[in-house]
Length: 152
Image (cartoon, rainbow, N blue to C red; front, side, top):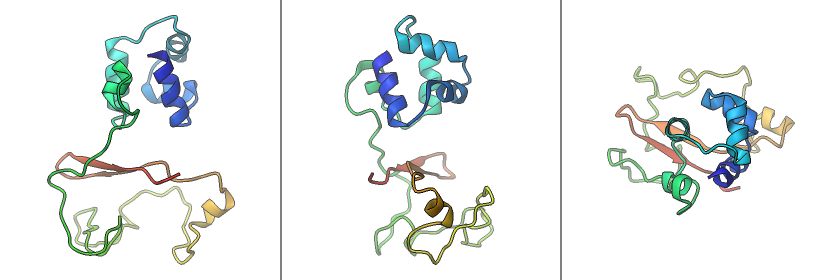
């Protein structure tokens, strides 16, 4: 399993120390698992799957299948007729329940404004071309979620 953990860290572009911090465990624990000195316990595996729900448990535990789950749309997701796309007009973007469909006030920002009129992306992304979107996760009010992985 230590090889699969190493593969996951490479896939997510995480350093072992970053992974340990996300997991809330000591860095030495991750180091010992990666080196093969210790085998991961139940608590580690459970925390891993909770912190990273996109990981395929069969792959992690048994080495079967792909590292990431194939995320199917939730059964309760609203269906729409119209152009396919993440932000097509047929999708209701009422995030905060106020009836206002603008997403700008519903998400916290880190102070970096985007150039909405710029077809190349945000000004921040243009300054740092090594930044890219790795995953988009939508959380629904019924507790389900949906993940999207853009092509690389």
